[in-house]
Length: 142
Ligand code: CO
Image 1 (spheres, rainbow, N blue to C red):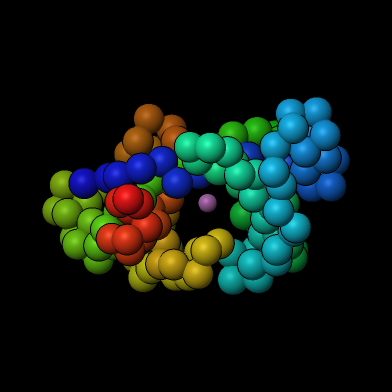
Image 2 (cartoon, rainbow, N blue to C red; image 1 turned 30 degrees about the vertical axis):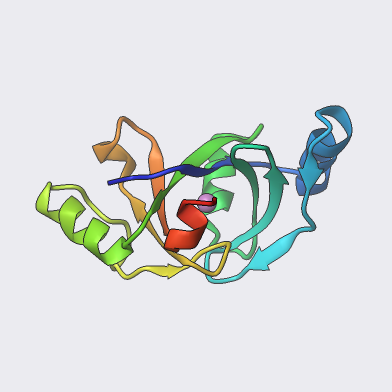
């Protein structure tokens, strides 16, 4: 069901410093920061040849990243994002298999404006999984 690894997300305490490390030390292409108020995060994307790294920083008092950084002050791996062709079909499949969807189960626009869902880490070996719906064209570039 899951397709390509879309990105790996890392929570960071200092977004500017983390972006500079990826840009200046690792030599990667790094986006400008973007605020996603609905998710309580500011993101910077690092473009790699085969995937992306999403640097996450808290936005607002209720940000889930704020709580994550309280437990992991140095930052750390936060989630992995897999692509799916049909997020509602994927959700029904997962629920039928007994997996838990975080929140109200309704897909919301993610960092790329496409619908995303998050799966409960306790069902997947302690790792938070994001599913992102991607169009056929973007899934299978020529
Ligand atoms: Co993500």
